[in-house]
View 1: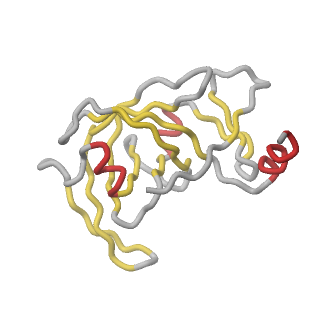
View 2: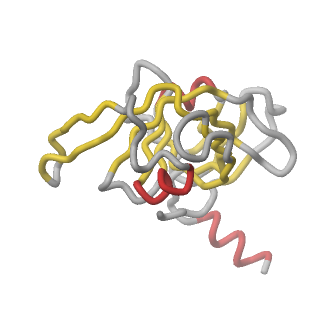
View 3: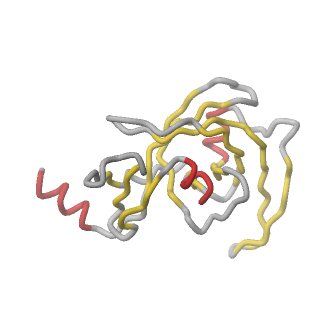
Length: 158
């Protein structure tokens, strides 16, 4: 088993973390759910945002979108796509067995095309996540000891 874990860690992997979402709006306010999310430094935001697939939005009670959701159409590589943005819809926290980040009030962008949760650059920074080696999936919190290494989580598709 030890060799298998070493092998898995040697593979090229993006950085994913376990998150806890607590809904502030929608049909299931105060519902908490955990999922893994991909750190996407190319997802540049001006406020804390997370992109979630429709199935995850359903699970948190944010689908169908609440009345204050803003519908937008974006041009994507696959053609035009509709997204639904909900301001300050959740609190978001990165959770590990031995610690957790602070809770961050976050905007939610619901995507009918995405299959996994994506964290924006603002969320990554505000939750003090430091990517140590994106190629190997190594990361840590800024408040971790300098020699602490955390490892990417498995993909979680919705």
